[in-house]
Length: 120
Image (cartoon, rainbow, N blue to C red; front, side, top):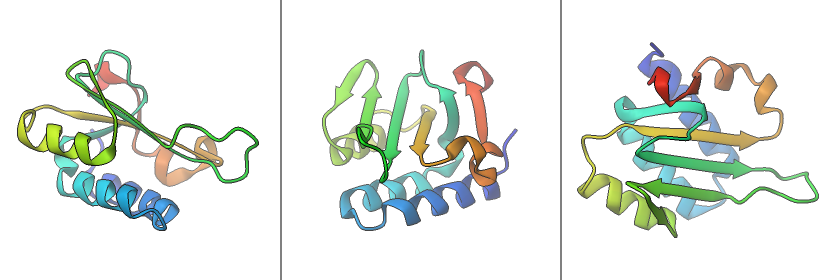
């Protein structure tokens, strides 16, 4: 089981990467408040609530910055995601996948990363 402290550290570090985007900073604040429900996964397939965030600054084709699914419904925007997860799905786990430069070599992320949703 991943410690709460390690998950908070990962959320804090990723927030520093997206800090210039107020909507993503808001989303990261929400996730920090829900830290006990947040699980970082490499593969979120099969998750009831999944969230993929990308922060790739130096690639030719950067990843989609936000992709989320709540109960089979694609969320169009981080604020819609927060609303759906905070109100109707407050008891379900949130599976988060982060994509950023050298994420496979970043210790703080690798320490919290689970292979897939079956480990949640």
